[in-house]
Image (cartoon, rainbow, N blue to C red; front, side):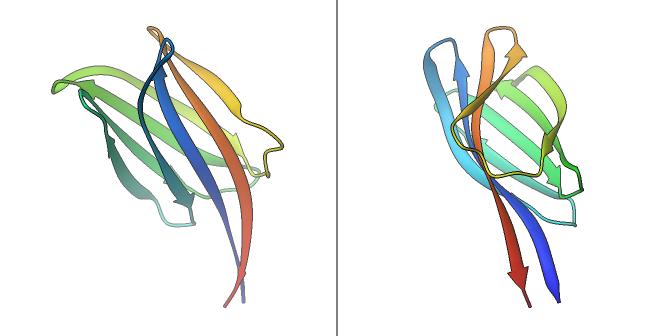
Amino acid sequence: MQCESLDIEMAFFRGDELLCRGAIRCISDENLQTFEGAEHTFQVTHAFERPACRVFISAARAGEHVFRSAMRVGVHTSDDLEAIDLGGGYSLVFKCAEVRLTQ
């Protein structure tokens, strides 16, 4: 049986300041991962779907809600870093790798 997933390396910025980084693996089941920096916490809910995976980001600073962002990330392998403006001076820089596993 062949199983598909998408690995996404993520780095969250405010302006030029790196807030935190981490990686997720989008699989068919919805998952929640939390990434914590010095002052910020990013909760990323994700699930694998074709042609694009669901990714929902919720951010807090010192325990106070900052923003939410819902997006779809196309299933692909990145040639280079990609970036998305999340609003309010925040951005997400990411790189994707399509994974096919045989079980």
